[in-house]
Image (cartoon, rainbow, N blue to C red; front, side):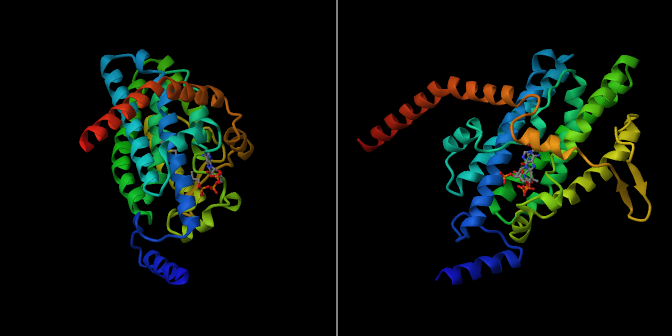
Length: 311
Ligand code: ACO
């Protein structure tokens, strides 16, 4: 029976059709999806912190309203993704436990500090730009609930990317000090943004299976290249320099050549030793503990309602 089920699953993947929650799926497929979707959800939630720090300090009411909306969108993305993980049998409380105890990962990028307001712009431009490169293909991911969540998330990410770029264009039209602030943020975020795509293909243990299952549609290096090609003309238009002396157009390949990120830095940050890992996890833990009474009250209310419905 198992081999018939496996053959059905393989046929669905082969025809580029979607796997849905009630369909049979191999255990490895389920595990990989829970791992990737949970890590993605955690990234959205932890990702609220670096920019959230600027909500009280945004330079105008307009910028504050925009930033507020953006950070709220991120909470929403986290919730769609936790829901997608729940369709696979995961439990959201358990996933949160795994995040705060360090047993599940979140994106390395959110462990870097945001010392200036230009960081808000550069996060929108680079980090949300990289998220779009990585996530647009995930709209065609083989697991239905994940792919559908991605459609809406990508629309919102594209608004986020534009708000970042527009903020930077405004700063670049400002004073010399503002232009220097933008360049400094670009210098700090460029390499960590390239690392968001994950380790190089030769060092990416999950890629082969995820590609065969059509969870991932492109390898880490393919998406990194796509991001570089997309970003270079935007940097020129903005008037900033990307901090890579090896970055140049390769006429033969029709793509940009670029330098190698410091992979040992990525490993360190993933292992918990980045500039802000402790702070991010401590903040998430405190929020979880402070919210305990809300969860208890909601559960008590639901239990009362259920008892009343039975009576
Ligand atoms: N930060 C933290 N961990 C990472 C990163 C990163 N930038 N890149 C890779 N890893 C982890 C992987 O999760 C994996 O660890 P695990 O096996 O314990 O889960 C390990 O490093 C090896 O990497 P890969 O084999 O390449 O892992 P995978 O095939 O899952 O590819 C990738 C990693 C590209 C991040 C993939 O999981 C993905 O596309 N995820 C969905 C997008 C996402 O999570 N984005 C989050 C940031 S964007 C945002 O939230 C705005």
